[in-house]
Image (cartoon, rainbow, N blue to C red; front, side, top):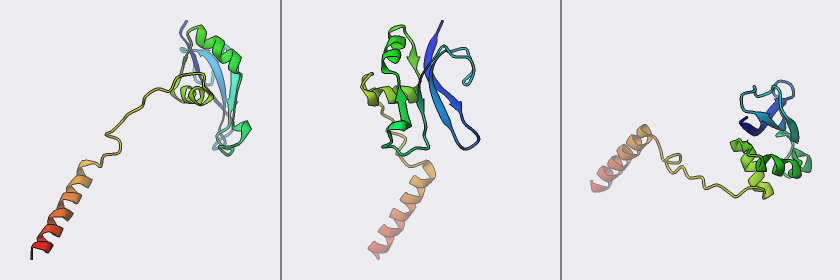
Length: 117
């Protein structure tokens, strides 16, 4: 059985509240899970203790059993020191798109023509 440690959404519309759960990867996001491992409330301030609560011992147990955390849960585990930080690098994300590059080239050409006169 492929097990994942992931978020299960609860709460009403526009008021999300998540449970950190160990679940079979074939089950739906908010469906059946094996064990609840913690909670995450994104509406609370980042420095609040209640924003993220995890049962570290049980999470370690599931990781030893081969459970794979999702990207968001992996970041939580990295912050808690349970997992090594993965190198993330997307250098193209910050680069401007084609049209923005064209506009910048046009502006540079106009500025060069104006300074030449």
